[in-house]
Image 1 (cartoon, rainbow, N blue to C red):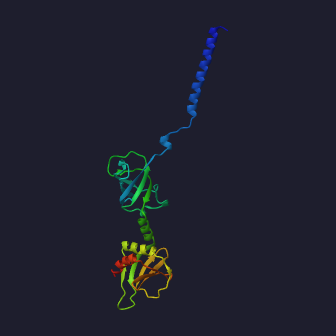
Image 2: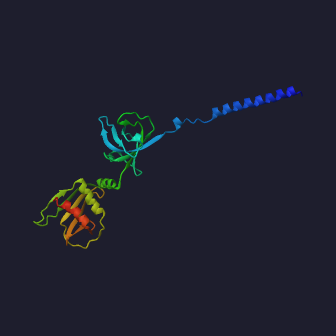
Image 3: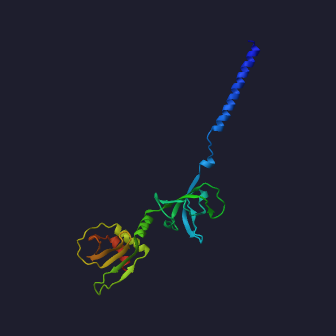
Length: 249
């Protein structure tokens, strides 16, 4: 075989290999799975804010207005607003909550679908995905108290003319004080046989009825007695807190 024929043979083989490679590359790209990130991936942003107002309109829609906290990136320190709908996952410490559990002054985290933010105030968030309530322990206790008591009274027993029947209904702050005292008492079997000078009475949703605590004054000590025939002695600090409420009778 002449060198000229060999040259054209080698050239033909190279052309065939090159064409096969190009065809295989095109077929592979055609059959490759689509990875359209704009469709398959949803980018989100999260920032922290304080609720400034919760507004319900005539059409039944509810809108929350918030102020971004200083710990955020500078772009999320302004005023924002969003509409509440059923698609928003609302929670507190992993437990599901409702819009009724939120109030002005609460700090929350807001997670929303990444979107173009318009330079208006308040800035509307079109697709909020998640709202988390960020509460401290004090607010947690307040919510627990609100769930188990409606009103609470402190009253005299009226057993003598020196202590006629009187009753005072506590305000919200005083309710927290009373439950802070009671929840931190150590009760034991009752040993004091005196008669209560005052009663604390509240309507318990947990126990489906009224709950009473007696206040016995014995040798300048305050003894708290319970429905379960147990008692506890108040510290001086607790006594001073209770005295401020009793003095309103």
